[in-house]
Length: 98
Image (cartoon, rainbow, N blue to C red; front, top):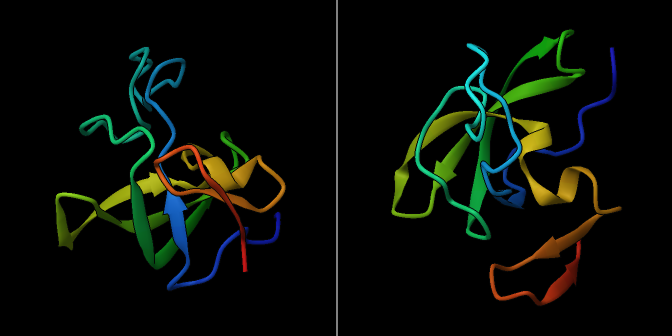
């Protein structure tokens, strides 16, 4: 298994659903579905199981419109997963991931 990319409490930036595939094979969808929060940020609230078929972990992440509600998401559905640790704050401004 791979090492977790994030820690609980980290801020992460949602990728666009465009080009992603759901667990049911639906194109342009997050793995578990849900609204497109492209560029918006959320907070990692909890970590779940490792999905071998996707090569990453599931996480519970807050959603921008309702910070007390979480979505089950994959690590790979966030910009910081593949950007070398830079955070995009939704405004196109990069910040170093701490």
